[in-house]
Image (tube, rainbow, N blue to C red; front, side):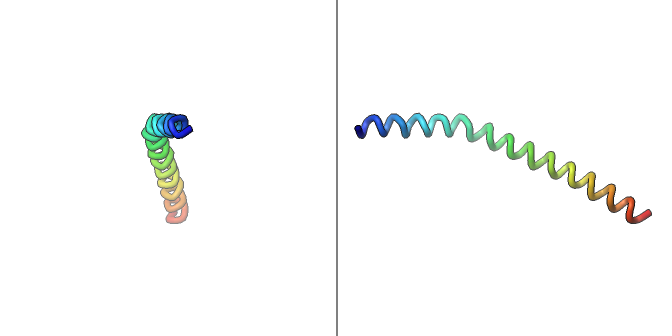
Length: 51
């Protein structure tokens, strides 16, 4: 019973380690995209307001 539980835990850790770097890259990409989009959007708004 204990050995089976340990194997499941190891498998979960292995899956987590495989997914985690990819997930971090995704988060970074999404954050960067949102920042770029919001900067462009804010910049356009400011330009329109200043005219």
